[in-house]
Image (cartoon, rainbow, N blue to C red; front, top):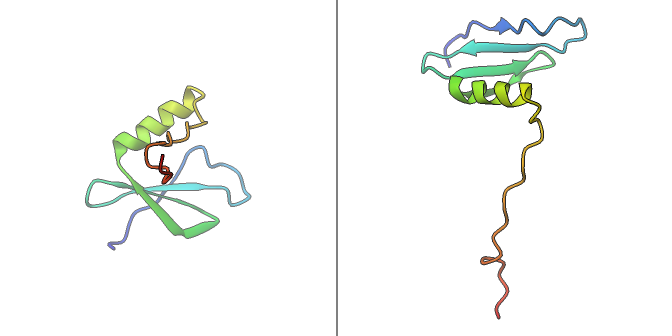
Length: 77
């Protein structure tokens, strides 16, 4: 993986290592990591990150659980 230029989030102002870092990768995706676990990096697209941020700002931090299909429950009738 190429060297990434990590940028600290402007909302990560506390001194307890609770910082979020963001970097743009050469393939156009974004990488995110936390200061307390810098070896764990997640990748996303700008569009998906924007969707998450808008949802959080709108108070939709609880995501619905996926629907369970009863057709594949494994029980025979």
